[in-house]
Length: 122
Image (cartoon, rainbow, N blue to C red; front, side, top):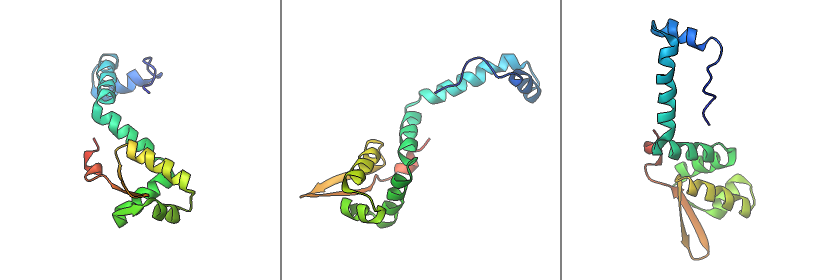
């Protein structure tokens, strides 16, 4: 969420001193820069990934998958000490964010990191 369009007291003066020009004149440039970045599809994808990784258990699951390659949900459950339902929820969040891929083999769900997922960050 972008901040208010009304600048903080003193910001225009600081921008003027920094740039050597009229701070009020360069403010729209910076505001536009922030809006342009936030509108990009790469930004939306990165934001979804950051939100998915903001949970300690999900970040731990990603670290484990990075070390081990592919793991069954029950192996992740054992590593994290969580219930099956909680692991399933966390893995669905990671899958929806495009960080993890899932495949079913019989009754078992296997997860691994999506190849090149961290190379796609903006």
